[in-house]
Length: 375
Image 1 (cartoon, rainbow, N blue to C red):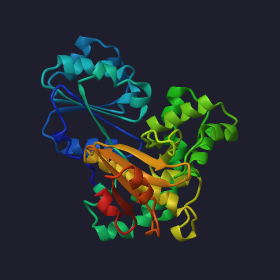
Image 2 (cartoon, rainbow, N blue to C red):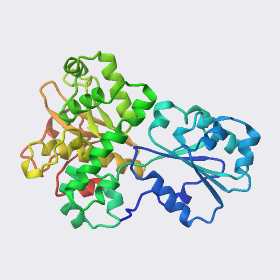
Image 3 (cartoon, rainbow, N blue to C red):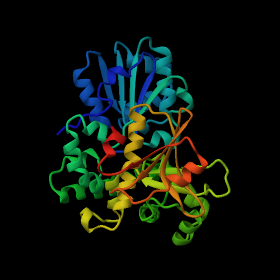
Image 4 (spheres, rainbow, N blue to C red):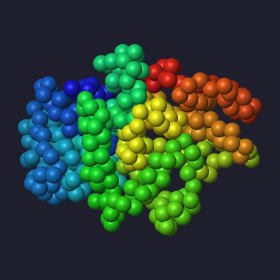
């Protein structure tokens, strides 16, 4: 089954003499997205893979004439796995600056972000889109709300990586997720950052996985792992840039009652989180439904914000008295506060928050109304 992707009509995003950069986690379907687009385009295109040594030599050479000759007579140049090419940003800059009316697409994993290859060379010359694991927005194109809610337990336990979703049996889903962790999840970090092995990285991710929805202490992680605090902070930063973890910071207007120094971390996919701790039990057998629900909603809301171009600052809120609100959005000069509860709670901390921030809009997001929040 081929799932619809938000950016599948790539012609809408192409601009002459600009590089359309599509990046994100490994194995989310970037290559499939490109190939499906190319099947239907009328543009005369050239498609190559950055793992091809000849292509690496052409673009890393920064030779104007060689690169222009490579592009001659084509309307569209597509480089998949472009992060494999040394100095790819400089090579693509030569293309868009010297080949008239050319379209360019470059896809790649989070190595773009880790290595900084696409930043400065293509300033003002690129359009960047992130492709995530499948979103509820994308799934809603082939499923109605009833179907999405009926399959919610699968998204909470097995996540939404395309390859995992298409599997019919749970064992097959688990095998795919384990393979993602073992072969792809940490690949960019290990290759680019010269980390000696995956074990210490996985140990750190396991500690984070058991703290979903809680504030994370770098000092505590450091003690548990026997690792320097600065190293822990560096690895967490790498996890963010690799689309493994999302860092949510505390909201405050410098009131003494509020806690803002610590962060919360969420996994970009529930299935990856559960694979890290090897727990794929059904919801009724779990004691972490609250964490799964919070993680799911945080990441799905991020996808919604990205795809629908909702420009906002995201936070959580907590006081020293441990009164807490899960999700704060600051946009268009207004505050929006959300509590994420799988079932409707008897009480919330909205009253305490409104005492300080009086014009806030508040809402509880449960399994009954979550699609209004995401779609």
